[in-house]
Image 1 (cartoon, one colour):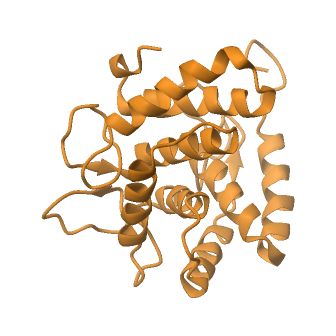
Image 2: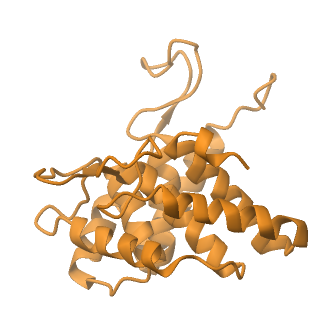
Length: 219
């Protein structure tokens, strides 16, 4: 695996996919490549605890990229692969310190000498999930407020060519959220459980399957 040739986003996703495959199959041939991929991710970790587009040290932690690395490291651990403890602990410190309690959100990026501002609901959902995967002690009030915010944003997908909801290619678009948000909000609310998850799951499945392509090469 030449992960160092990939940008941070590609490396995180590739390692996550490999780690999930190994965890599910326990294929011996995957173990060594995955261990090397995990080490490559650890080597590219920024001093602020996360990952950036470049594997070079920039001190910038892009949380949208870092979330994929956290998922990759967690999947590797669950599959019995050794994850360097300093890398795991640095990620825990990053997400613990990045939480913006006043706005019940997470920022898009963390840098030295930078005052973070609240990120989008999609970034907040992804970071909330990463914090859960990192096994941080839960802040029940903080998590509850995030869950309430996410649960109020069930995606609405428009039909192509109607109500101004088609994109430039005439395809489905989300009128109130995108697939990135739907993916992470679903996982966050699944782990949160309770009535909010039950209500979200019913609505999300209906709108998502309704927007699924059912003809042509995209089906």
